[in-house]
Amino acid sequence: MLIVIAGAGNIGSELVNTFVGLKKELIVIEKDEETCDEVYARYGIETIHGDATRISVLKQARIDRADVAIATTRDDAQNLAFAVLAKSFSVPEIIVRMNQASYYEAYRTVGVSQIVNVVNNVVLDILHQVEKSEVKHVARLGDGAVEIFVVRIPENGKIVGKTISEVAAHRHMPKESIIAGMFDAEKNEFTIPRGSARIQGNADLFVITKPELVKKTAELLVRT
Image 1 (cartoon, helix red, strand yellow):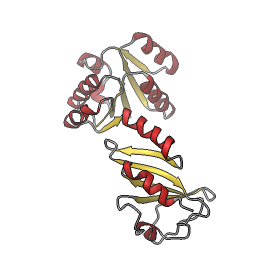
Image 2 (cartoon, one colour; image 1 turned 60 degrees about the vertical axis):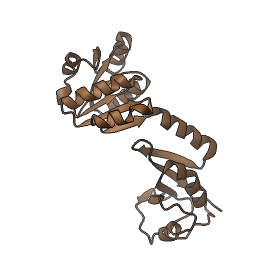
Image 3 (cartoon, rainbow, N blue to C red; image 1 turned 30 degrees about the vertical axis):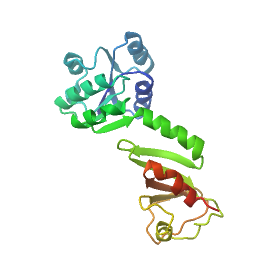
Image 4 (tube, helix red, strand yellow; image 1 turned 180 degrees about the vertical axis):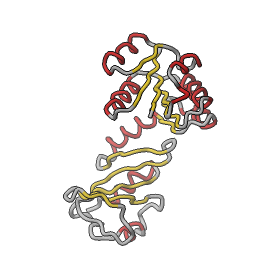
């Protein structure tokens, strides 16, 4: 798998660090020559000093062979241009860092596969820390429209011993909230529970819901 990354700033460099550990084939495009040299010196991967919105630079990065193209710069206009060009080279998977929500429709229109809303993610993470300390964030899907979180059920919680179906039918349980997984730390066992599965104390529940319903859902699940 060949991954082409445009931008080696904070996010781009962290991605490089992660992908190198996963033994992925990487090519990084970076405008700043010093940053470009630092990435090469640290990881020994192919780096190209240039503008990722120029076709000649993209060809040098073998964009036509890329399986994934990722734009991580702080400039949405540049990320959008990179995405358009990557699409013209038929890159199967295009991922962009979105800095301003006003670019969302533009990214979708040009066929971006995944849009990472940086500002929204930071804000929601802070809210989790301030208001929902019992919740552990896992992922957000789409433009933050769906959230997956984990919550640990107290040993003496009110839902302990109840079935998934009984919890789902509770009058205060949002219909949009779904218990999608259950992890037993003692057994090191993860299951996708059926409606008849019973909830154990100290189990970690993986829940899918809307961001605005995370707090309400978590509060119901951890009641004692």
